[in-house]
Image (tube, rainbow, N blue to C red; front, side):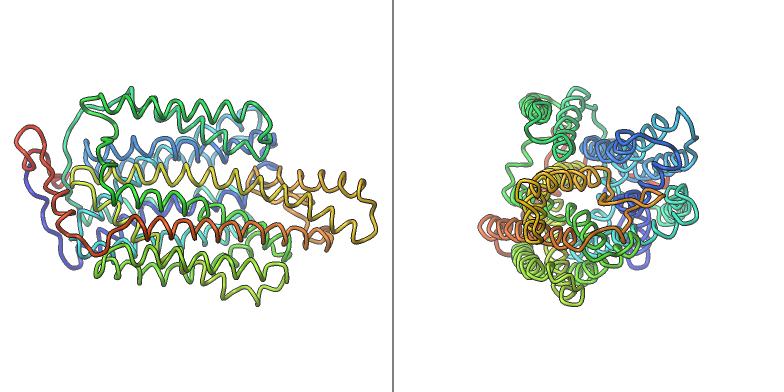
Length: 542
């Protein structure tokens, strides 16, 4: 294989811009759809189960196929796969926006939401691999800080954009992906990113095992807050998923051309960074749901205004991401990752102390601090993990990190969601008793109100009362319920502080000091059976 053609100056920035536009759709889609869920359900006449699956189908496909997407990128070419992923995602988005009314609506929307997930899973590992191969090791921290900082900000913009677009038509939340995809394709054609890849056979047995394991596990976690942990189906799904993943691990160890080379986990840095990312994702993704619900229920904000609430988090996130990326380039990952986890833990702890005031002005700086902590650690941890892979395996390494992150996020949503419901029962009951309601009656009413909130959360909306269009009727939420939800949210934020403190300990104990460029260079020059590191393919102008 010939070396990848060096890319310099403005060309590098053009490649980076192309990849940011490519993945922008997936980040916007994480939050924009949840805002329109009530409107979609009303306009199409979907059942509660149907609308829930319209949300879950995308997440399940995305989470279960990341490893597949990463392997495809490394064996068929990163530019080819990112282009294919953008096309699939855009086409599926157009079909989602064209969902017909009537009996076909549910099956149609669920199918094309799953296809969106497939497009995202193919696109993201390839895009990140292109950025990694375009920049030298000493520049990657800064480049990926920009990549993750802008992409992360788009997650916060999603609810704001969704709120305004839904006022026109809910279909626009899908159609907005089309111009973004067009710009991405144009920039890819102009920048012509060149990367190395190595053709190999696809391990379809491994693909079936990991897909089945992740789908069952994530599905179990997703349904746990709705069905309850006591439902035997939850335990069966999660146990079966874990069993399949165990079988996957054992099969991969004996496969000549595995979907995932398990030897990569023998690299201590890669293993520790993925542990840190997995622990932090227990917090990062659930935060969007719980803080948005808090803003709507306890602070009385409309859905689109709840997105503005999250912008404060991303102000800290975007600034700290840049600092953390530059620190990675200078001193290595240990310092920014550990410091970021500590800052996030402190931010969530102080934020938790203020949420019951129902005064946003007393919370905003702690929201910024929590966001800064997450931004400080997320980009360096992700970059340092991918840096450990050889140049033929960047897509695979990204697929692994994204699979772990999504699996952990599903677990976090399930466990923290169940905790929220449990605390709501207690807090609502205590509020009612304080108003003179007998304890027995208060407990009965609290159980119903907490379950109502649980049902709303499972479909990506807040359900404490509804207006005619299916959105929460904020004027109907009594003050005692707002206080009870704030108290429950405080418990969640304290738990998030503890989780990030645990991540800080793992990073401090597990990561080594310094940049260790020799380890990265060794990974880039990894030997292959027939002819060493010079055997392979470089993407040309196709």
